[in-house]
Image (cartoon, rainbow over all chains, first blue to last red; front, side):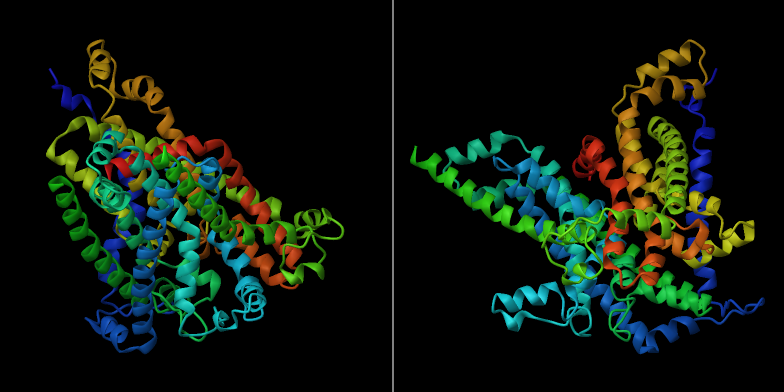
Amino acid sequence: MKTTKQLYSYYLVLPALLIYSIFFVIPAFAGFYYSFTDWRMDRLTLEFIGWNNFRTIFSDKTLILALKNTLIFAVVTVLGKNLVGIALAVALNMKLRTRNLLRAIFYSPSILSILVIGIIFTPILRTEGTLNHVFDTLGLHSLSQAWLTNPNIVVFTIAMISIWQHAGFQMAIYLAGLQSISNEYYEAATIDGAGSWKKFTNITLPLLLPAININVMLTLIGGLKVFSEVFVLTGGGPGNASQVVGTIILRAFGEGNWGLGTAINTLLFVAVTIIAIPLLIFMRRKEVAE
Amino acid sequence: MGFSRKLTIRNYIVEGFLLLSSLLILLPVMIMIIGSFKTSAEVLDFSLKFPKKWMFSNYMTVFREGGIGRAFLNSVVITGISSVINIVASSAASFILARRETKFANTLYMYFFMGLIAPMSTITTIRIVQWMGFYGSVTSVILIYASLNTAFSVFLYSGFIKTIPKALDEVAFLEGAGVFSVFFRIVTPLILPVNATVAIMVFMSVWNDITIPLYFLTDSSTWTMPLSIYNFYGKFSRDWNLIFANLVLTSLPVFILYLFGQKYIVSGLTAGAVKG
């Protein structure tokens, strides 16, 4: 006689396990091995070269800049998407007549391909483009910028576009979180004479922690893996000013430096894991404690 | 009385501010839509001015010269098949993992969950696909998408299947049903709404993606819609009206899906927000 547990045969896990292992897990682990080789497109043999690829990464100015840009992009977008997302969610949780329409409008850019958005913004953000034209008309000449061609601000411009696109997605998750908070808390607080800000910090924020947790994780991981935004908007330029880890890997791939490209990917893998896992554990604990 | 009036005034101010901010989203999209009906000279002001004559023929030109039909079919095949594979494989796996509740099952769940965090290793995946002999093919891209979305789907399905009482399958087992018929006859009908959520989420992310085709589709005749715009953008870089028409056509399928599938998107997001 089989116990009930054994009735749930692992055969049903097999297809998912095979597809996921072959096309995701095995390449990831193979990546660790190839990171320590001089693997190139144009050679059949490869040699083990120890830490050389990593030494190259940390001595190459462009690669260091790419690491720095990736971090800047991740931090700016985590803050922007979550602050705007929470603000929109709280506002659109109020009883407003147009709230369903407004929710749909703010969510809608996140269903578009980044390629579509990148191409729309190209003429808008040009130095002679629509945005600067609007600023000039309003008499705000000082706000006009070379948005995509000034090396000092290009990463921030790309981050702003990413926030423009995705803050509505974060808003939707925060809205779902807000709707799971019982109204009784707010009623009790009103009786105790708490103001709006006090209710927000003492009730909304703590009870929104699961949603904040998932959103910070999603935006942070997404931010570190950034590729398409940069690829579409600047291709890493001007010069190399907006290169990020994702575009550098594509460049290394194109140049045939597969060992080096894999090493950069491994670095990203380690960084994401080191940042994400403790944060996941820490936030889970905090949630329980609340 | 005074208090509630103060609240109403506050709501008006918030609403007004939000309506104004929504222009930030709407204006760029409007520039694209209006621009797609202009002549190639008119469109260059990138403004909200309506065209003198609405050029519906722009869309015909894009269909004729942009190879849109082919790219559309490629997108449908790749997106459709990878979603189906992903749904069947992930829901079956989640069913077992959610029911077993053993340490091993839990470890397997974590093994899948890691896929939500870790970045994909593109270059070595190419190596594996080459070694299996189908690099550059549509099949490889379908399997890669099915694989990349496994973590997210297993996460959603597991949460939902745990809320279905085990008693239902135990009765079926007692009557002599096997695990396959329990899964397909009892569990599958109950998880249909989750299937819709996963289908829409996977469909949208695959439809819009450019990274995988860029690395894995070496032959431009197999390109998906977003990537084929890139080609078009290079070829017609002076005809912004045609480029805009192409962008509108590429966005239309996901927009229609969004209109009809909103309910399922929201329920997917709710699962994420509540379970964290």
